[in-house]
Image (cartoon, rainbow, N blue to C red; front, side, top):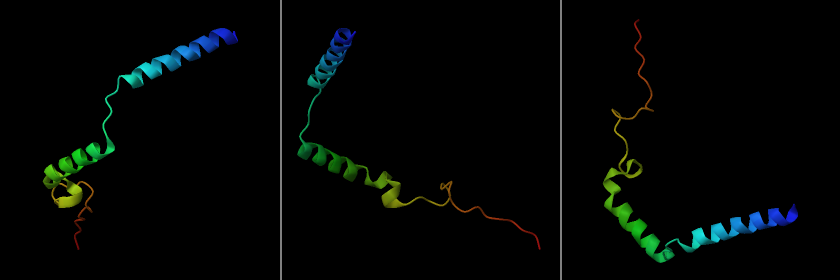
Length: 68
């Protein structure tokens, strides 16, 4: 049994290595530059930078109407 499980494990390793060999690798410096460019291009749509208007904020405190 251990021989067949060893073969199955090796087939799994080979399959993973083939998958990894087919990946396109990008240098970290290029990925960082691309990310920086994307962030700068989309800064006006980022709610963390521009804030959220109170009319569209679903987490704003609810107003309570009370009669005296």
